Length: 80
Image (cartoon, rainbow, N blue to C red; front, side, top):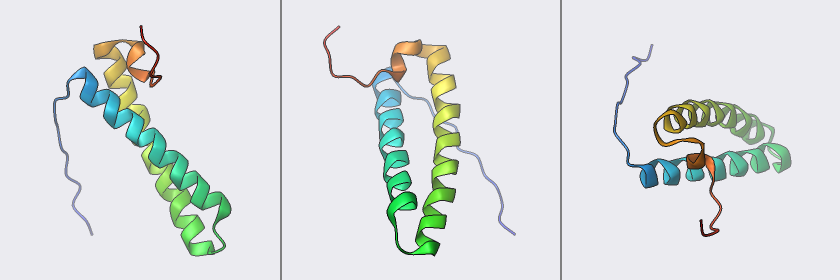
């Protein structure tokens, strides 16, 4: 049986944005593996991992938006 532990941290706005963008890219990578892998085990593992990462991203995104505003979810490189 594994012991669940919790990590609490503090992030600046740019750090939160980098983490959220990285999670978005990881979700896409895992989706690609789940949809295109010829190895059933690899595809299943990637699909399960993707669901976990989506949950993490949603939690972090909600907390970040409440602190920094909805613009924290905008990863475009356009000038403001």
